[in-house]
Every structure is written in structure tokens, then in C-alpha cells.
Length: 171
Image 1: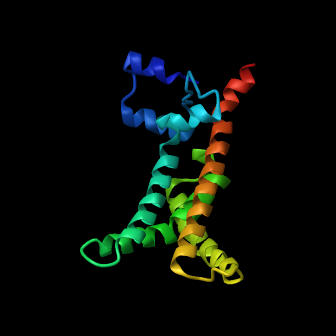
Image 2: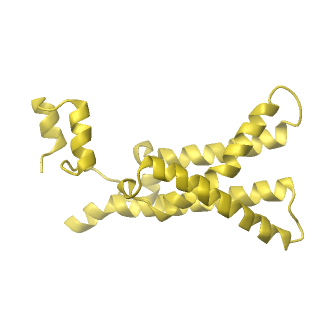
């Protein structure tokens, strides 16, 4: 198995060929300095950008729902709200269940994210129905936000464990 570093230095392969080798499993890319702690994992954008993007979308949705009732930004509320309800909960569950990038193709991740969101959101609504809060905008918003953030951190921790496996094997 060739090292990416050597292939790039020798300029033997073009970028597309490198990608094809990686996708087929002929080329293994390993970080020479993986994060040593979960906190370091969270601070490194090369590992956790998906987490912070997801959490940013959740907080942006909360802000837009609170601040926009009428006006020109109302379509933004509808777009973010739809994305928040139909994609984010399932996406965070998929990241928690399948932390390895190669376990699912990107298309499978998107399809499962939408499908699982369509399964999770009614379950949250069912649980809220039996609470004093009921099924109203703000309880649903906060419940889905809490669920999404919790699942995001579970997924991040599982991804951290996978990233730290090579370091643990070398010890």
C-alpha cells in the first residue's frame, strides 16, 4: 500500500487518480498527528467542521424562528425550518450510528437522514404530547434542537474514537 505523501512528492498520480485509489481502498490516508483528546478533536476544524456546521444551523434556525414573524426574511424561516425538521435530526443520528465515512456513501447518508428525520420528528411529537408543554412551536423547536445537539456530540465522540484508534494500536 502506497503512502499518499510519497505519491504526491513523486507526482506519479493526478488528483482524480489518487481519489479513485482511495475510494477503491488501494490507498490509505492516515493523519500523522491525530487529536489526542476529545477536546482537541472538537477544536480541530479538519475533524469537527461537520459538528460545528450542524450546531450553527440549529442555533441559526432557533434565532430565525424567534426573530422573524413577518417580513422579507419569512422565506428564510420556512427554508431553515424545513431543513431543520426534515434533515438535521436524521443526519445527526446517522453520524452517531455510522461514524466511519466509508460505511455509507454520501447519497445513502442523505437518503437515510431524510428518512430517519421523518421517523424521529413524529416520535418527538408523540413524547411532547404527553408532557404539559404539548405540541407547540417552541417545545418542538427546543426538543428537536436538544436531540440534534445531543446526537451531534455522540457522533463526534464516536468519530473521535475512530480517529484515535491508530494511536491506540501503536501503543
